Image (cartoon, rainbow, N blue to C red; front, side, top):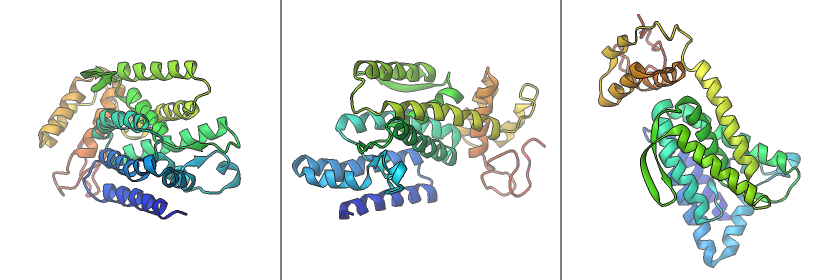
Length: 292
């Protein structure tokens, strides 16, 4: 394996460990890692293409690996490689606008699950659609589509900023923003059916994101009587502006699924009044119960 390939692996592992061990946003770390790896791999290849091609051969994926069992590390590393400026720019923009918004609501652990699980399923979907192919597969698009699937299922009416071509719109409903992007992807797929775009990975990532969101909705918050619970009990735990905003979202939510999603976000961020540790659920490890 080429020395630069080892450096890329070290950057990925180091960045993910830093995100796990610190208060850094996982999404911010993913954005930085993708940009950094793009700069050290792709940009030198503009003048010395053998450098980029060698790293791609080491770290990008191929459908044939699913049959041979070789180069299994590429299931992770391919998600941090990109083939062009436009390729990485599109993924970074969606991560910035949707990924950070999702992490604000779900927390780091569940965002990590969403990103890497859907990224894996996206890769498997692409490999199944191109069984035995030796073509290179690379990019974070499958995981990014998975993040979109989770976000649109759990928070369809929330508003996020987005670009529509050169036009910046500061507050667009999630379902509308995702719908526009899916429509664009569908149009591209119909117009360029034989392009190098991994359409199967995009579909698999998005669908797996929705499926994971269904599971998250059922498991992250207990199925208490969502309509009769006195949510004003949470007010005593509000200690900063961020929690105050989430509390207001819980109170004002007009759909059960949205209220449950915001409630989970509240659990992830609120600190126990007894031990000062993050509670993470309806009951703290020290025994404190939110609803009692």
